[in-house]
Length: 336
Length: 265
Image 1 (cartoon, chains in turn blue, brown):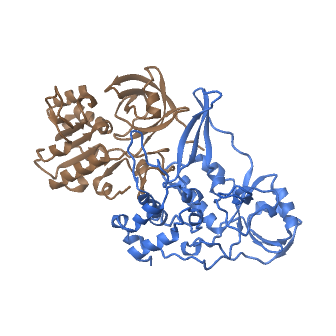
Image 2 (cartoon, chains in turn blue, orange; image 1 turned 90 degrees about the vertical axis):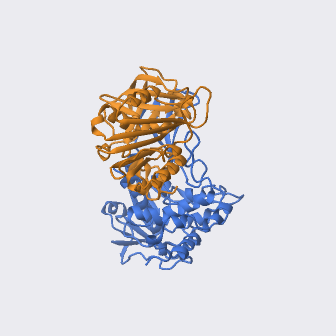
Image 3 (cartoon, rainbow over the protein chains, first blue to last red; image 1 turned 180 degrees about the horizontal axis):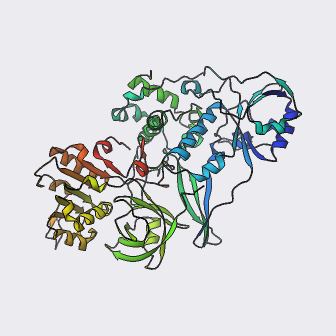
């Protein structure tokens, strides 16, 4: 069923939904950018739909809602482990098709990799409903069409932003909140069919260790500064490190947390005693690239990268991941 | 929902000082692990570390732990009667059945001896299960030798041939000197078909030892290695130990050489 309604009417729906849901959307954090007078667009809770940034790509992905930057796993009092109290409210996320595909990649790692499920992720994940933002134009550096992540049916509601809002919703649970608002229309969302950037994907059958030794990675040894921004803005980078702390005021109490980790960042592979791998930054670029467009697929049957292009947006050295994929394809040949 | 990150508390029932920085802890433990598996050892407010199980028996496991970081520094202050938190065991381990009835050569470097010690002890106690066992063990110096008493006991086993070496000449040391790799060519291997080889140690040691065995016309699939990588979870979620499409915590830490040689970090 689809409805057309005014922004004002939709805000009333949001107010209704807020009784049961926390509602996340890309919002503008003014003046918090890297340079003076620049903003950051990232995910946060909204009260009104006008707070949402629709004409810009979120600099950070919505993964932080499901997989927070820092997440407490246990609190300690003396030697007792206590899990944090679970949030009661369900979650609505406004996001684009590429990011919905990204959540599927997170599901793969946290719920399906190995025989055990990650309960912290699972508890949040089962609360989430997707409100898909119709995305027909894309932004700079996007290459979702090449990755096949431009379209999806996995949403509770899909929204076209125009003079008014048109909403296709599939989830009966949402009906009560919309009751009495808007008029019924015929609508199904459209999807972008061509990005400004296109990548040619490599034939993964032709990839072996000889590719790892190629000269193409040397360029990145020179250019990459191992800041890890590409990892942290990425929708599908899901690595983390365990971290224990004791509270300063009462060192008997503390917590165990997990914090985001990135394979580009120093220390990612370092073990106690000093052994470590991929000291060279070009090797880190190779490792990340192979994970996104080769070995994840070898393990799970589809590519990890969703082509959101945030890594290219964020890199302070202007390294282009889409270019890197194309270079790999040039060497090994294109996927048929 | 079961939370796999919750560790359980286990009592320390014995501590043996192997060297100044390597202690072996025996914990009362109710699960029988596989040889070569590891556990996540946990100290609240300090952290967790993956540690391999060096031996086990009814109701206990041993772990030989070197003092090299935050968690292990803390562990070394613990005494008998104190406890540690553990979760696991994790990983695939070695399959003993693979080696039964065969000529087995175990090559271990330094703390690499720990994850294979339970295999050695199994065949030490059950010599009828093995054709012959060559043990090639290397340490940096005589001060770094682990499990000295057990090595002495293994030397007396008729089925065992033990070669213990240290990296450099030392005053008062009359035993073998040099890297383990240089002892590979002289090993007596009557039948290369009925043979299995285990190599555990630092990455470079495993690489070059593997090459030495290949020179002796031993097939890659007869060689087994165990990897050590940084891990936070042990259950395939944190991503640190991924190499190519495998996770060392899930598909490893034990790999066949044919697979291991393709795993480029």
